[in-house]
Image (tube, rainbow, N blue to C red; front, side, top):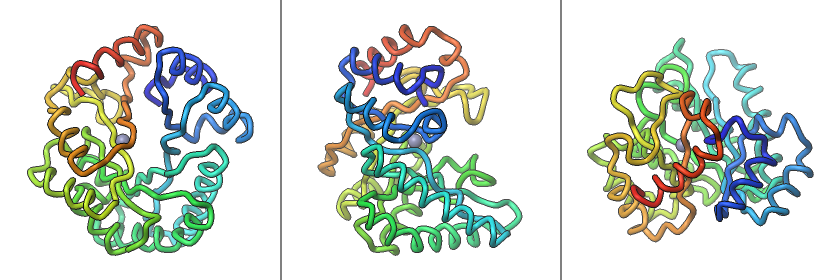
Length: 261
Ligand code: ZN
C-alpha cells in the first residue's frame, strides 16, 4: 500500500531490485490476480510475505453484518495461507451507533470465533490499535494497553498485536506496553512512518520517516529490547507521495529509513 500506484508485480520487481526482502500484501491487489499468481510473484522475487492486510471490522449493531465480517475474515485467513503470510493484520472496526465498550466486546467475540480457523491454517491474527481519531469507525481498540489486554484475555498463541508508530507514538505508557507484549510473545508486527504537522488528511497524509515528530529510533529500541526480530515495515499512506514517481519515492523511503529508523 505504501507504493499504491504499483501493481504487485511492480512492487516485487522494484523492492527486490532495491534489496528489500519483505512485503506486506493488501487484499485489494488480490482482486486482480489469482492467489497462486500472487504467491509465485513473491517467491520469484525472493520476497517473504510479512503479513496480509487487512482483516477485522468486526463490530456492527447488525448481527448479519457481524456474521459477514466473520466470513470475510475467514477468507482473509485463506488468502494469507495461500500467499505465505504468517499474519493477518486486524483493523478491528467500530460502529458509532453503539458504545466503544460494545464494539470492543464484539471484536473480542469475533476473534474468539476465528481462532480455531486461524490455528487450522497456521495464520496468526494481529490486533492493530489505531489512533483515537479513528475510534468512531475504524477501530474501537486505540491503545497498545487495550490490544495487549485483549490478546491476553484471548490467551492463544494465534493472536497478538501489531504496533504502528503512527497510531501509538503519543502514548505515555508505550514503553511499558511494548515490554508487556514482548514478554507475552505477542508482538507480531512493527510499522513505521511519521506524523506530520499539520496533518491535512486523517488517513492519507502520513509522512516519511524523519518528516514529523515521532522518535522512531527510540520506539524501535524499545521494540528490539523485547527480542523482536521481525521486519520493520514502512507503511505510508499518502496522496502526496502516491502522486510522485514511485521509483524516486522508493529511493527516498530507503534513505529516510536508513537515517531515521
Ligand atoms: Zn499499521
